Length: 474
Ligand code: SAM
Ligand code: SF4
Image 1 (cartoon, protein in one colour):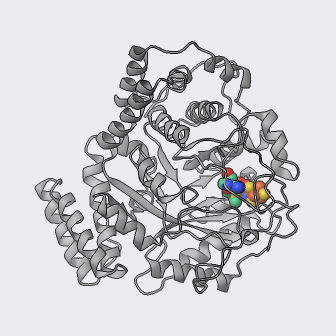
Image 2 (cartoon, rainbow, N blue to C red):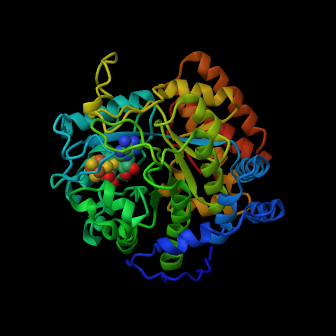
């Protein structure tokens, strides 16, 4: 996909800051759009075009109930029309909670003296991975505080250790990273460990607000953070995830900035972000954040729908920070990945259940404590297709999210069959009989949507899975 750079006051140059707060505010100050204009913008997105900043501002300024409903409906249509009913599942694994930074919203902040600091040893990583495999996980995101102990070499070592664990039919097939930004050489070292996506969230794109929340350590440097993923790209990591922490500043400013960041990556590297994350601030030990910029559930739904329409090709991640009912509702607006069976306390996957949650052992509080099995069950109940697919990245089909989006027939040829096969493995190896019954029915329904040749190839592979083969994919 070729991208046409747009003209902004700050021109896009690799590794140079690109956010102009005044320009973004100017876009946001455009007059209220007509319903006709809102429909035009939604239509552009449904025709598979990424929106410009001006068009994104149109959706952000569309605030009558009728307009908001049309925007949400647009996001639902886009999801159904382009992506279908698959939801990719993953789990976060916290490797270490030591941190030299002082981010006022985070339980790991250096000044939280009550925080229980822990870094997993190799043996503990293996125990955690085995426990995650026993639950059926295939995709992880490894998470780290920012600390001198967590060097690129250490991160690469933990990734390799995790990939090396194989218990029964279990294995981890894709490891994404959420860790401190690196210099180019550091990113290269981590890339060589065969990671999937490297995520760095800007938290807030407003430089003045950023200063107020980041009170010490390397992360206090706004521009170094802002250009992180440029350095990742320079190091050859072309699979990156962006995000903003909603609740630190005006949510409309952050949505505009996420789109601006997308444009920047497109303009400089001809590839947009693989995923966009939109965490909302949650309770954390010794958090200092007030509620001035609190984002209500209604605005949260709105911003997710607008992001879906603004960058229709990107993956969208919704985490267990949010409560169950809200998560279920938000899925329809185009979320493509969710975590399941999440535990944030370092080392807790392999511990006995039942211990009280202790905020000083966690980065923040999650609000969805369902097991992976329960989440799979509920997704199946809603006729969704849970997927553990990792095929594109292993087949070297990088830029897979663009292909899903823009190559006609890609989803029917690869994504649905691979989702079916990974779900079939899960049902064979890890699920309770009642869930398996539901699962096979959903599998059959999805097989019916494929062309006859693909149907027989998928059925053949399901039989091979039943006989014990694993990791079959297209
Ligand atoms: N330490 C690294 C960093 O800050 O980039 C990587 C991991 S940090 C543990 C992951 C993300 O969690 C942060 O980027 C931030 O957006 C989010 N986070 C921190 N505190 C939070 C809170 N109280 N509620 C929700 N999300 C939070
Ligand atoms: Fe450290 Fe990241 Fe928490 Fe900031 S958000 S205190 S860098 S773990």
